[in-house]
Length: 323
Image (tube, rainbow, N blue to C red; front, side, top):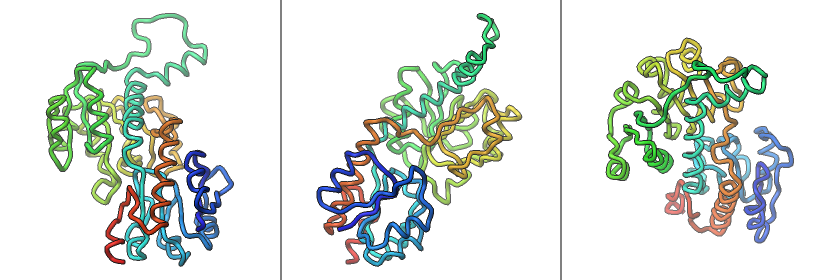
């Protein structure tokens, strides 16, 4: 069968696909346009796409032969799951493999903002450092503070557990009680308002849904402490970016660390000008090991789906019940 891959992924995944099928990889190192995806999909049985690809109804319906969509990501808000399900096309993702990696990036962001690492690096490179000073680059201590975790799925739970070495009080908000966090680090489940009011550091780990869109907006930012730091490694639209820019500019909070953006890949120019925000290019899962494992999982999902089997990480397994 024939597979269209929307971007070059690690060779570990491509090798698996090449063993059993014919593959075509989009040759440019950029996000393909809608038209380019539709053209690339012509005559193909499988589509291996990235989280940066918007796989909408038009794309899914453009190729009658399409039998399988494998997403090279954990989140799948970039795919019209309803249309795929209606067309009896299985959709898969790559969960689990990037849990530790993404949690580590959230911690890296937290440390970078709290200790003003990026700002200090720029300051030093610019030749402004003239010697130690008692008020130079004052930041925030990490240990013995209150950590707020919004969403405690795989990544949120792992992120929270890593706080143990810093003797932190952990608050979390989620639909369900997280027994792992409560038993291992004495975390407490609270409402969002209480979490925002009491936390020194707040890290977001929720999927993008209608309910989480602009979950953090002006009202929520004004509830937070003046010394609070907000970290977002989930999805950009969970945070109202205009409100966040205002909060950072007017110093409602101490700072923020962002790996995702509301209008990605566009980053608001006003954000770029602020010193109290650390910006990353959606690279939370960007380690050699993790990206390679993601490629293997996506390829294995694709192989299974094209065989008519339920992929190991199928998002919509009910398509098999409908056949």
